[in-house]
Image (cartoon, one colour):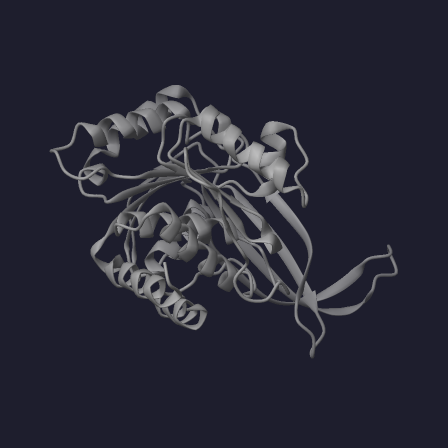
Length: 340
């Protein structure tokens, strides 16, 4: 396909985003950023003393994926769990009008997971991350919770054009939940199939028969116990192995500065070079941007390659931003036009 023709097709997909609804199901995380200015070195220990400046809380995990769907112009339906704690309240309050949170459950004995990043810098320098503190849920989810959660998804499943599963390891997004979602979608009034895409941090190989997955290279290496680096033969074997073992229609491996690789059964691998500069500012939440763009593009009728190319543009844009960020449809359209 000629570059101009491809760009026109990608632009048409972006234009279709506002008419599409993407259901995002997964682990909601409060991303807390504490900003400070380096004051001096402590006399108590060889550590920096920071003069506190500000605190910001933004949605992380599935929440960031939903924010990215909304920023792209599609309608984001969000389903997940938060605790009945201050962190849960702040997290829910941080969503804009573009994200429908009516399917988010507030559970009494659940602790909202929080990732606190402390960033420091001087007056005339950019803030850099000094340390990250993770506060986990502290409550392993039972199968009963997962089953009850699946049942309450019925209204959202009835009206969505794609489903995005974001598994950060809390136990909410399970293979059984994915299967229940797939069966519910298959039982809908006959219409075009609804893609289900998954991003699983720790158990990618447990999800079978879905539409697509978007692991990064390190997750692939961990899942298959291989080292890819610059070896395209190892990458090829790994991608084909994932296709076979998961039974998915497509596997999109994100490779950081090396771009992306798209694998489909009985089709040649598509290697997509990185968009923009390889001088990355911050990779926080970049995987959420990639899968949000992929899901939105598939919902809008894009092919796997078209969706992957749009996701590559979006990923290249978001890593140039600091913190947990999003990419707008205008930014994406401009990148497509410039890359034609």
